[in-house]
Image 1 (tube, rainbow, N blue to C red):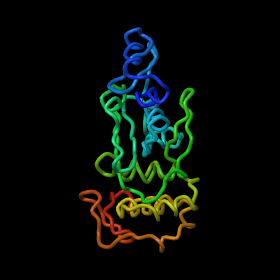
Image 2: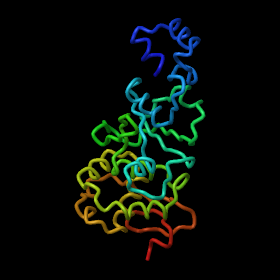
Image 3: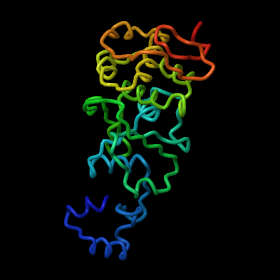
Image 4: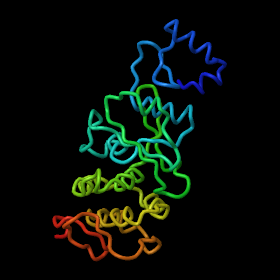
Length: 235
């Protein structure tokens, strides 16, 4: 529970201090509280960000794919979690300074233009409902981190498991995506995986920019999308 949430329910700062002193509430950093004895995790923190602070922050990328059961490559333990949000959305200190067991990486971006709310999906965590990226959105978000925090071959392996993506959703998200790199990577991987839904995309409507893009060093240039890719994916 955030201080803002409690204030709206008539619990003043003085009353909050009294509750803490009486062991009815326990501070979770500056500006957030929990019941004594309750354990909290980062997903519970995200629930609070979404429901009490109305932020766009959501589990995305590989984390959302793992939560949706679409990837066995991403453990949901100490390996960490990827959060995304709109540029300008800053996480409160109580979230960033809390010692979550997992490393939480948050990236506010302008990767997409427009409202992404319809491309989210519900995820049940204990008794909490959390909005996370759909598989289509999550994979595009994952490519944002390639190659710095995302391996190329791992991305292809995950793409191979995404045989049931919705082409209409993919098309719309590609049209909304501002990153030429992400769009070219997505189309290359999808075409290489030979999923049936790829043939339903209208790539002529997509702005793929001009010129070559070096995605990885010492890669081979794919002439269709003008990006450097691993040699293993050019056969």
